Length: 275
Image 1 (cartoon, one colour):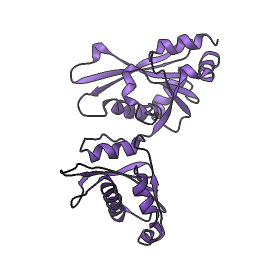
Image 2 (cartoon, one colour):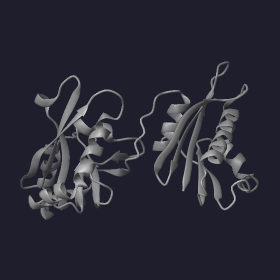
Image 3 (cartoon, one colour):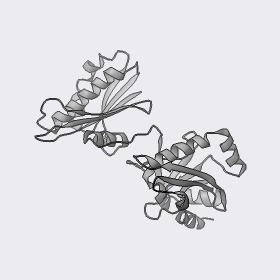
Image 4 (cartoon, one colour):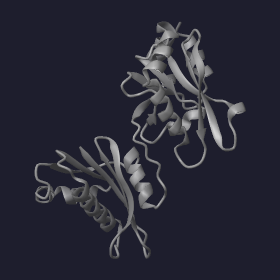
């Protein structure tokens, strides 16, 4: 499946720009910022130009994709292209083409919006998960308290962090005790996505059979576990209630947080009431 998220920023009397993010099967393929051609007179003309540019990218990158979806946050512009989709689709033999409206708050559309404003965008192919607030989920608190479910979270190690790097400690625990706290992840500072780099390192480790087996031997139960977002890892939370998790998507788990008190102590204090 080929997806293109496009947006534009109309600047009256100045140059206007188009931002595009392209994915194939959920993996980033392309991102760009492009000047809107000619001299658009309003926002709609810019959005129509963005959709036209997205189509040109599809012509370049299409490789027999069975489904092609182009997203934009202008209902009027999308409706215009939906009205002529059958004609446009003929250029992509064997592919099903569609134009869909998407709110600007959605993660990939938000990235396209930033690109249209010529802001740098960090984009990771690491998949995201939905974030749930445990303060309103008695089932989550009860599961942690009564079933001994495993909770993963990251803790900053001040004594090992410097101006050039941040060091994170992976804490793995249950309601009763800490199962593992000896895995450290120093991450070089600078540039966007510092915390996501740590996530990618940890996912790689957990996918390593030796590390996986070592954690299991300590009593770590991976299935139906939880990754807790704390103050140290709040940067992993994006728009649209999504966040990057340290656990691979192949492991059934949930990402949880509290909007106010993000400390691990708050989670286990709340869960204590359900023992």
